Image (cartoon, rainbow, N blue to C red; front, side, top):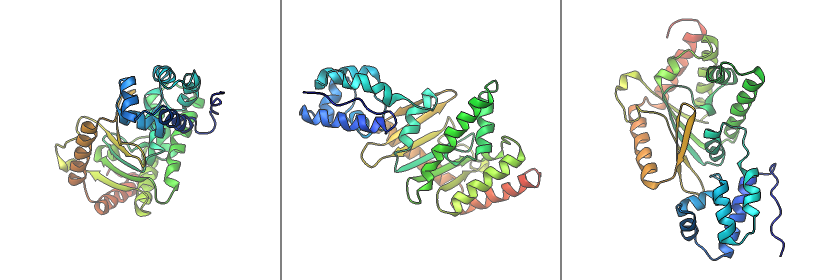
Length: 279
């Protein structure tokens, strides 16, 4: 009997691949945990592959073809599903982000990508790659701005950002760029499209001084947490790790200014930047 046809890379290949995986697994009479044991991964990881929130690597694809008797279907199609316009270390997180029902993020050093203006994003991308061509920077900025289109939906995802005061004080791209960036933050907050809290310097030591946190929840897959460093990043789905980071995030929200006071501070800083005064 003929196997499934190759996936079309232009039509959500990861989601299609996940649907085929679920179909093949159920046809083989295996639970997610049983199939995960064959791949030496957790059952929740299989669930995330099926939901399209995790990337299918070639080594997994080969084993799946062997275990599920799908000839070379997953091996042939995992390349299409892995294509991304994002940097390798961030691609999987960006694609998971697009499917999340809730995103909670702590940003210690810069305004989160989903909340950036094009001008601010350009300044960040240029700082990351000072020798890149303008075409390359344009490509990076476009990808970052298009990520934010998920906020066009008036209800999903829930976006809750705790931003360290340091990120708002660092003049990125110039004072005019910062004024625009903070006005954009304030607008999203006022429209109820994002919950924004500022973690002030006055909060002192806190639970996430070692780095950023991004927690993502999904309708039909286990939650994920994303850790990012300089040119590196990783997704974790271990329940204990996710649970600990969620507790850390809750501590941050408790130490941060309220959304109302955060909005007042952000708007004041935007005015100060606009008038070229030191905040």
